[in-house]
Length: 166
Image (cartoon, rainbow, N blue to C red):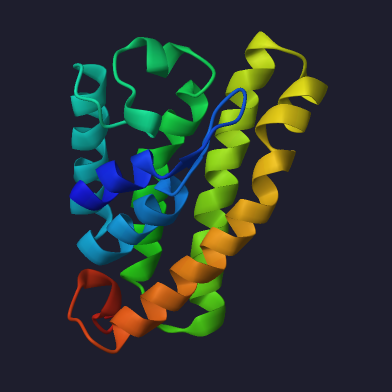
């Protein structure tokens, strides 16, 4: 969970939400810990943030973060961890194309839910323009970096993501 807290503090301030390394770390947590434990770790981090610990983007905390512009992105994080953990357990994290696909899917899920959440408050066009498009280059870069990390770790660990699929 410490990696996720640190990833929250690495931020490029933007509106309506900052760019962080959270969408790199959340899927890696799912892959390394597995679907259940990875999701639980992300939910514990979110609960800590909701209860006031300064662990969310840029050290933010409180329930208002879950009802504000970033609520959709936050809601997507446990789902992304679960998705990646589930597919990684089936061997996806140890193959280059599939590892990249995992990371891209996790980032796409976060952007889709974040954009939908924003569209409920502002127009769909404005939500895409401010809550999806500016994040695409970073999502691609973080997906590539995450895939590389998964491939490196697949050669050095016995984490759930790298056990042979049965």
